[in-house]
Amino acid sequence: MMGKITLKNGEPLPKIGFGTFGSDHYSPARVAKAAACAIESGYRLFDCAQVYGNEDVIGEVFADAFRRGIVSREEIFVTGKVWNDMHGAGKPAEALEQTLSDLRLDYVDAYFVHWPFPNYHAPGCDGDSRNPDSVPFDPEAYIRVWNEMESLYDAKYTRSLGMSNMTIAKLESVLKRIRIQPAMIEMELHPSFQQRELFDYCADKGIKVIGFCPLGSPNRPERDVAPEDVSDMELDEVREIARLRNFHPAQVCLAWAVSRGAIPIPFSGNEKNIITNLRAAAEKLTDEEMAILDSAERNCRLVKGQVFLWPGAKSWKELWDE
Ligand SMILES: NC(=O)c1ccc[n+]([C@@H]2O[C@H](COP(=O)([O-])OP(=O)(O)OC[C@H]3O[C@@H](n4cnc5c(N)ncnc54)[C@H](OP(=O)(O)O)[C@@H]3O)[C@@H](O)[C@H]2O)c1
Image (cartoon, rainbow, N blue to C red):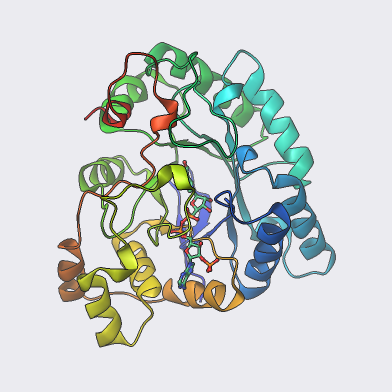
């Protein structure tokens, strides 16, 4: 059931992964229980991050799965991400050392720069929270962080490198100036937010796209909920394909992502949903179905990132160069 694609550095990557962000609602223990269910169900890609605050318990799940012979280390693809407060000199190495110790691994398969700014907020903060030390994107600062990521790759602590929450303008300002290109870029992707230009830009460069919030993140943190947001699983276009195929709307969102060539990383704390979602990765939508879903685009960004704004910035759109 679990097909794989190949990254441009030759590393195999599963077509669907399992998210591990508890969205401020699911405790670390609940996320770990879900990850254990996911590994037993057949997921082989796990999207982890230090800021999710659960790498230690997820590490126990991996260790247990290795001990019980459910998978070997080589059979799973584990990502990590350096959080915004670890962009300083020597800090990415420190962060990855902690991640590897918590996950009980010798290496991660991909290490990402989580956000392109050193701006951070307290875990669980509300949407009006701002850090006065926040600054706009600075390509020089980003390249300094990336150079540290390259050293971690050279030292074999990670098998690939990734970027996250980037825009074409930001990529244009850094890609030509770095030695090791990102093998993957993680971005928000769901039928109501398709990011076609950025997606095609990555495809042209052979960079694989990991799609976060693939179901429209129905239980996202309060700070990421706005009155104008739409619900992907309730869109007419998604419901129409679900009816025709006898799918759950969640499976339509995931089959759409996989058919497009993205790697969706849904989270669920529910065993039935975990299994349902995995099955969707084996489905290929027809051109007609993809055309219907094209029209589901509503430019509905859910993770607006307003908590990362710097003093003087007027709107979250500035974070995205809009
Ligand atoms: N790089 C970044 O900056 C970034 C940002 C955000 C997220 N991410 C990553 O992306 C992952 C996924 O994003 P997300 O968790 O926000 O959103 P999501 O995967 O779109 O949505 C997850 C929610 O959908 C529900 N759900 C899952 N399967 C379902 C089904 N079959 N039917 C109905 N409801 C279903 C789950 O509820 P139940 O528990 O009830 O199933 C869960 O609360 C995260 O866990 C994280 O790893 C990365």
